[in-house]
Image (cartoon, rainbow over all chains, first blue to last red; front, side, top):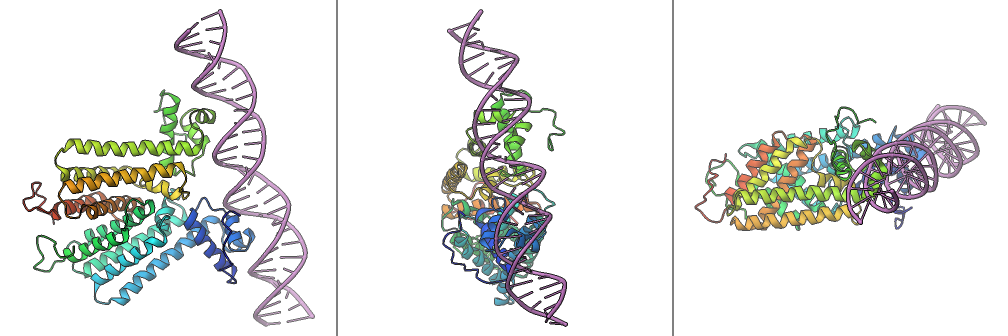
Length: 210
Length: 210
DNA sequence: ACCATACGATACCGAACGGTACCGCTCGGA
DNA sequence: TCCGAGCGGTACCGTTCGGTATCGTATGGT
């Protein structure tokens, strides 16, 4: 009843399963997994608890399915960025950073769903944890591939740096400690991609990018 | 009763308020704020709920007090690192990174208390949120000061990069996507401190990098 | 026309939660 | 000697939670 105001049934008349997942997405992300009750999801989806339990065995299963969808969205971003810059792995990495940077304002005070969910799910056997860990592993693998293709020296180290910076930017945006985090993020990744190339000439000072 | 096993009253006979805070520290960090009930804290502290509410007005106040203590620990790490390397701001920054890197294995699968608590406290008016935000702001301010003193070009950008990397390393360790995160973290910070210096005759000589 | 399925609604269950009331004990300062 | 504050123990309150049972209805494929 608290957060029901001001939403003119945008969800409208999708099948209930989609409405439930949309409502879960909004609520889980904005308020956290444990704060949101099944009843609240049902109201937001304009349906009932009964309907939710017809489609999902348990609340945990719904959480896992939500994260599976989020992970698929990130995968799609990877795909898109790869398709937009074929044979230009450096540009792919920059496109990825741009994707995250552009997403920062949108999820400004609520951060990354994976990071947040991880904090709320200490139980490593929770079904959603497996979704998160597999997603992160896949993402890292792809990023290492891009770094290798970009000809960076020590691609695993570069991928680690980019991963750290991407996640750190999201966390710092969430707690408001760094302003213009998106711009800063882009400049950092440009530095990693541009300055540490194996090609000749740019040895010593990694000048250029700043 | 579930988690009481295997702990031979290490807390022993501190005054109850300290026992409560110790128990809260362990439980909040390992299981999350919302998963831990006041009753569980009481059992772990070998006291009762009544005693807890004699010392803290509410559970939220206890959470805030816990985070205040954690923040003070981080502040102390800043102080120590500053005192160990007076007039050597570059070394101070590296010492800070070392402090975080060494802490990674200890909190391996449960991450940073601030990041986790942030995820569990979407309400920005929660007393603990203020503790977190003030701590992060202080930390950023000090880091910018170190970067300025170290003569880095664009110290705010460097501080942002270091902040991102520190937080990202903790998150990545938590979800297990990056191995040897501590080593990688140190090498990255060495790069930021060593390579982007404004003056040429760098004393610390982080030359051999890669 | 038929029937299985999905649906919305409501009422309910047991458990756990944050928080309170009340008890009797101990111990240290005046 | 007394007395009050801090303590541990227990029972309790109202609420919310995840999950279930049950009912009547709408609907769409055959």
